[in-house]
Length: 464
Image (cartoon, rainbow, N blue to C red):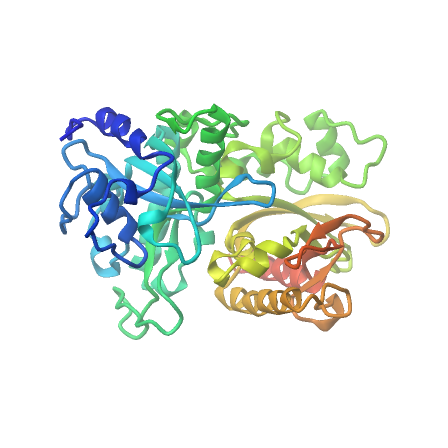
């Protein structure tokens, strides 16, 4: 072998010879390429690393304790590299996975050290002709492993309860239980629930997590790196996570202020809201969550890696929620080119976790809001199915070049979600699939859907 199969660093150095090239540069003329998802990794093993494919359950480079993963990139209109999908690690066998703790799991034994080969995805392209762009020797940091271990335990606990059919990628931070296969595929038997089978799922590192890996590689200025670390604000450290889960740490920071007036909280946190800014509640919530270290908790290392989003909600004394909840602008080209709902940006947004911070008015019309509640929330599967209908409607209109208010779902339609600009007079334009430009529109939760979320949470608290 032209590399030491027992040393990860030697394998990594050898992998650099694949960058900027395709497997066709190394394959025999009579080589018959494999097809289907997952086949590219086998071809890289066979052709470039000269390894025989086997059914061994351990890491691909077993002597080095390292797994090989090939993961696709796509290019934006600005010619930037973008992560195309989550990194699938290994399939979940519901009846077997509950037998192992985290340190003895297939995921941990295979994926704590990985050689990540990023390649440029090309539609309808032969696997032999895909170009490899980046090589990363990736050892999961200790801090990330602590969060991933908790994620693993959350997934396993749900399976043990006979709720594998209710698993959602929004249940966890970095490690997800992602759907595998197509609608209509056969379901899998699950333990402790003989009456309901569950869709096939796999352990995966989420797209948001992989985005941070790619960002570091690109910013490093090279196409091969072996040390990846977070460059953003840390909300918690390793010692914190050895004692408590990330969720408990964040929630404990808010517990001190429950039922306190927002003005009093601002003074206690040293936040100046004397000019009464429109986003004063978000400013206060960010100060609590970050211990005043950062203006936007959504830009912290943990939130970025998890795809986690904090949103503040104001509930009037009557119980009414006036404002709908906005998300990002619709990328018309991304929607048009996305082939599957579960690979769409909207699916990632809506299946991710949210941290909702609730301020509730005490006296009608007085604006005397207090911090009422803070909780993590994941969109239920039935609502995600409705969101798929929403996305398909958006896609159909974009493909038909119907990018206008008269075509989109409206808040008054009562369909949980709608489309409109973020500002009343939006003048910014975004590119469309036909090479033209159109007014920017945004994804929204209806205000009555936000009310439903808050009311369901209130009922849960009353029943506890």
